[in-house]
Image 1 (tube, one colour):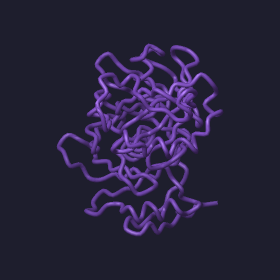
Image 2 (spheres, helix red, strand yellow; image 1 turned 60 degrees about the vertical axis):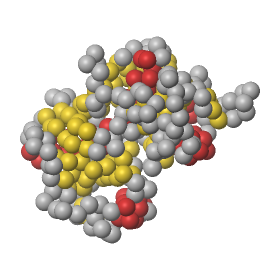
Image 3 (cartoon, one colour; image 1 turned 90 degrees about the vertical axis):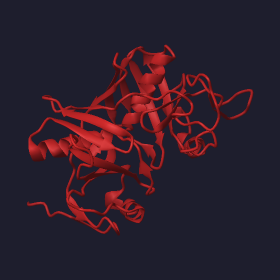
Image 4 (cartoon, rainbow, N blue to C red; image 1 turned 180 degrees about the vertical axis):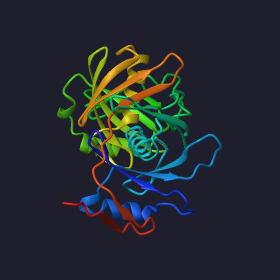
Length: 283
């Protein structure tokens, strides 16, 4: 599947006790036909009142706490299967709520942002995470500097830029910043250009996955960070390489993400080894 162009593999692990292994994820990502940003593994519920437990695996085999685009894909799969429109999911980051809209768009309640330095987390104390000391480039003329940081279940650094987000070598800066010592759990790195109070252009280096066509939690973090630095309103359209997402930071502190999801093809895979077979499509 894809959620605005980023590649998502949804794996049905219901009725099983095993998990998708890191080795399997790496093997799957090493094949041309199945390169992906995240695997969304649907497991049986662990907590009463929830539909499923969702485990999220990055393309490097590491586990992720949250993935907004992937959650939309999960909602679409389960809506098509069950006819239900609303779901409550459990993830390692907590409970998430998803809903299929009448127009085909899918809304996911991503919960509340965490803004304190120890919750993001950062390796050292910052009283104000709207602007932290971090830069790339010469001290007197940094290329990127002073990001706003927040957690949307996973750590995000939003660098505000005045120029076109494509004019920066994010493929070069991204790995360095993702693994900077200030981020003990690594971080998602985004370049954000505010073109209007309700419009952000965003490009993201995703933790554990690299450059991505779309990162839902990065879009959420950009709007939260934009609002708290008075660069944007609390609701905005975020244009990522794959298209547009709508993010609203509601008055109840919950961040709601709306966008599309698309099924591309189906198949079966071995969650231990990553061996896979694509289903035959009738002519």
